[in-house]
Structure formats: C-alpha cells, structure tokens
Image (cartoon, rainbow, N blue to C red; front, side, top):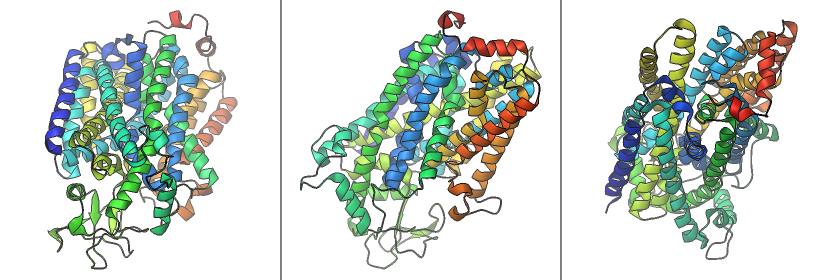
Length: 588
C-alpha cells in the first residue's frame, strides 16, 4: 500500500481512539474539567504527563534542531530533562499539598492578593500562547505533509481537531486521551530509530548505533564530522556557543520547566502527594526513553540527508524531496545552472522562510523569489527532519505513516493541555475568583469552553506566523516561565518572609524584561538587533536566566523593605513543607 493509504489507516485508527476516549471521559463538573476529579492513578498520570510534556518540540523539532546545530543543540536535552527532575523533586509535591487547581490559584492564595493572582493569570496566558504556537505549527507541519497542502491549511485543520479534544473532555478527557497518545507517539518515535540504527550500523539500539561503526569501519560520528567540514559547516561534534550562553539556555529551560503551568497542573489530578511523587517518577522514566533516543535520530537523519541530496541532480532526486517541496518546507534554487543540488554552508534564502513564485523552473522545481546571494542552494526547515527521516532512509511505507501519527499525537496532546490552562486561567482564576465569585458550575464551564474557542483562534494565528522553529519557539515560552513564575513559586514555598509586594514586583519586571528582549532580538521589533548586541552574550533562548535572576533580586529586596506576610500565610508555608501525614492531609 502507498504511504498515503497507510497514513489514512493509522491516523484514522488513532484518531478514532482519541475521539472515543474524549467522549467517554467528557467532564460533567468543574473539578473534572480542571483536574479530572483528582482520582487518576499514578501510572496513568505518569503516562499523561509524559505525553503532555513531550510536545511537538520534543517529537518533531528537538531532533531536527540537534541535527543542524550538532553539539550546540544538546542544551535542549540537558535543559528539558534537568528541568523535569527539578519540577518533580522540588516543586510538584509542595504545590500538590497546597491543594490548588492552577498556578495563579497558588500565587493568589499564597500571596493573599487578587492583584498577584491577576498578574499570574496574565503571565500564564503569555507563556501558554507562546508555547501553543509551537504546537500548532507542529500540527500544521504534519497535516501539510499528510494531506499534501500548504502549512497554513495544515494549521487550520489541526485547530479544529484540537478544539474538539479540549472542548469536550476538559482535564478528565485530556488525561485519558494523553495516555493513548503517549503509547502512539513513543512507538512511532522508536520504531524508525530501531530500523535506521540497524540499517546503518548493525546495532538495533539507537543509543549504541549513534556511536557505532559503518560497514567500512568508519565511526558514524567521524563520518558526519567529515561530511560537515567538506561542505563548509562546523564540525558536528564541536560547539560554537559560549560557555555562558550554554549555561544560560540550559538553566532557563530547567527553571522554565519548573514554572510551566500546564505541567504543574497534572500533579493535581492524583489523590495524594505520594501519588504525585510516584507519577513524577513514572513520567521521568517514560520521557527518558524518547530523550535518550533523540540525539541518535539527529545523527542518522543528518547523515542521510547530506548523502542523499548533496551534489544530486534534481531530475534524479527521490520522491520524498518533491513531496516535502510541495508543502513549502524544503526548497531548492539552481544558482549555478548545473541542475544539481549544491548544499553547503550559508543561507539559501533571504529571510526565515522561502517565498515562492507561481511558475515552476526548467526542472520542475518550485522557484524561490527570495534566493540569497550565498552559494548554498538548499533550504531545509529543521522541523521536517524527524518526519522525513524514514522516507530519506527508504523505510517501509507503514513506518513513514506511523511517524505522522506519532507527530500528531505529540502535538495534539500538549496543545490540548495548554488550551486547558488558558481556559482555566480565565474561567477559574479571573471570572470565578475575582469577577463573579457566585458563578454557577454550569456557567463556569461555559466560560471555560468559550475561552478555549477564542484561544485556539489566537494559537492558530501564531502557528501560521511563528517567531521561529518549533523548538526555538517553545524555548522562548520556557524563558518566559522562568522569568515570571519560577521565582514566585520557589520563594513562595521556601521563604516565609516573601510577601505580595515582592512577588508582584518580581513577576512584572521579569516578564516585561523577557518580552522586551525576545521582541528585540528574536522578532526584530524595537529597532531589531544582532548577535553582537546581545546583553552579556546571552541568546534570546537563554535570556530567561538573566530575567529570572533580576526577578529574584527584586522580589527579595522589595519583600524585605515592606511588611511581613500575615501570620496565617507564614503558617501555611511551614505546613506545606512538613512531610509527615502529607498524603492524608492533601486528599481532597
């Protein structure tokens, strides 16, 4: 059967499963909508957390960005993995014991202020919208290839499907849907890795194959280094980032993880604190399966891409290339007139993405209107590497289709979780807690679902016009979370003296500083800026570390210059850190 037929079959089966679960587990109350009724088992919650965590950035884009950045891309692995450990051990149990549905709820009650709650709601919306933009782009990429349409229509179709998942079931439906999505995405990620590892090195385990030898006895990484240097790229296994920037990006991703509202809320869906700890352990193991495999996928896909397209005549290029060319995510322009694909260092285009003309070239290629003066003729969107990898390697059609189903599972699971955070921030933390405290359960659910509808429209727009590749866009969301939430949460748990004035000041300054830097150096606003102008040599992806430090300093200084928190608040802070009887105390 063809790839298209296999894709229809596998995507159809998995989607039927997701929709069936969403309908079966649809929420009937606000508690079911927000935290799945608080009765999810640790194993199920661990699988759902892993699916929620491993978004399109992890499945589609992380291996892709590592395949192009090489050693420099390892910051994503270190930051995201270390961040989850930090969250599981340092924050999740205490937040679960505090017993609130959302991060703004925790901040509002811990800092005894609706002002703090409102600031937290705004921060949650900014972080979630930035994050969900990356997910919607991931959904669009998969659908654009699956249906052979432009990525804009891929995003639109994905918007409609995500809306159904989040609209019907709330957290209860999303949780059990994510259990199924984890099974699909991890199977889809690992099967091609096993195939390609065995095909290239004879080792079926990808982690071993990445460091293995090829048929001619050459080490795979040595061969990739040689291919890179021949084409003018830097060596794959050496980095170009400064030590400070590597540290800053890694730390921003770590503490940003610990402040992500859609991950934190997962620990409220289990009955007790000890169940939160267990589910965190399960999730860490399940996440590690994919994260330890991603570098191997990066090496395999990069090697296969270079060997397949470099100096190949366009008339002899494999079918997969032309399929992806139709989506606008890969492009070739014949700059020297020899009919061959010249893939060397340098940008093939002016701008972030190719601009196509209506006409086709003499070889049948799509013509680019914004080709650059550089000699490089090939543009490859980093986000296609995992999805195109099985096609490049010539794997069976059912494996190619399986990866498409896995990519959709990864993107849809996280997008649904993020939309739920957005809806609860508005309906629970803004409407219920501040504007209309007497609102009925039914009306609150209506507000929650209405918020999801508006949120998906905004998310779709940013999915079509993202500020970067999926992983880079998501990294900015982590920076925003690091700059705003992490200090307020960590100081709220471990510093009795931290008061509302300190927390509010820190969050406001932190989020504004990160937004300014992101807009200036990533989105070219406020006059734009180049890498030479970066503050302290810090990239936009790593600036969350600087903004977080500023947040902590301002929070501590302001809190010491203003009055202490009420005695009852200080007693709550003491209580949530007491382990004895924690399970019973928190079983709501």
